[in-house]
Length: 177
Length: 177
DNA sequence: TGCCATCGGAAATAATATTGCGTATGGCAG
DNA sequence: CTGCCATACGCAATATTATTTCCGATGGCA
Image (cartoon, rainbow over all chains, first blue to last red):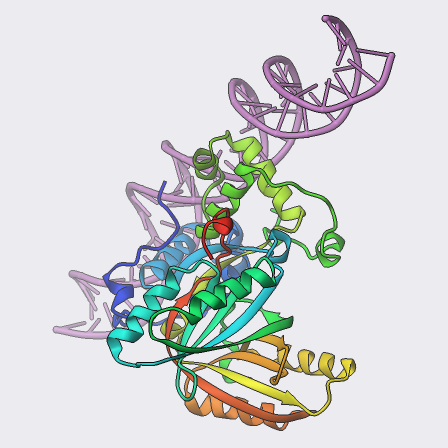
């Protein structure tokens, strides 16, 4: 069968200049699949108020158009032995594009670095990291610190998580900030 | 049919003290479902090397045991009109537990705040926010700044994203930091 | 008014999910 | 050493879903 991981084709890569108007049903589909990505098409169709065939066509179209980029099971990190979540703020010595790209590639090769954002202002990169324990996290930071072009790494441990769900607000946009 | 969103029952809430040993097949199941949460059970079974029925039983068990906390379709935020991703660092005036809890509740009510982490050290909270544009983000920051108990909010825009996938490393843990 | 593109739905078929049940395996007590 | 039991697998049957095909309704537009 076809994998449900949407291929990273030209359309998605080029930021999809393809015009595409989402109607209310599309929004509801996205909302439902965000909340339960494994919902059957029959159930999804029932919820959005159309029959399964057009519903499936819409889902496929949303995937192809790049609105849906994939489906993930969410795992409980702590349950899997990752007790530590921490942020690392990295300053580089050089911000030349080639050096930025090199650092990004380096970071992508580190499994414990879960997210990496290039920032405006003082800090160059903000990394969200996980680790089974503090000493592993320290080892990671040590590696980062000694990586090429890294001038300085500041870290902060997270004490607890108040909110964390990869859900994009839909339809509610205009209502509340 | 049964929803695939795993209920937040006692076991998960209490951090599941239930002993549970994951074998190699369980790890492979988690890995596959992390990469494609919508994979059919037949395909999953094929990949992990067992027949569909025991595979399904394992998946259900992993859900019940709290290893799998849900399934999500990942959406392309930019494609949906969220051009801005930014971090906000928040200092509170009081760190009394009741005040922390109140701030967490406040933050959970804000759809544009996608993540909220309580930190050790200087900053009290780190918030990851999205917004359709800068002025909306400014409005959010203004609200945050004037929220009860908030002393100070510093923000940083993200310029680009180098890595961002809610995937927990599995099995590779011992190999590389 | 008539053509055409778009989109939904019914029906048929192909795949999957799910259940029930029998069997193999390994730990363990007798 | 043997038999019991718990555990986990897989086959086979059934219930649900996914997917395709095709037809009809709707609305823009020449």
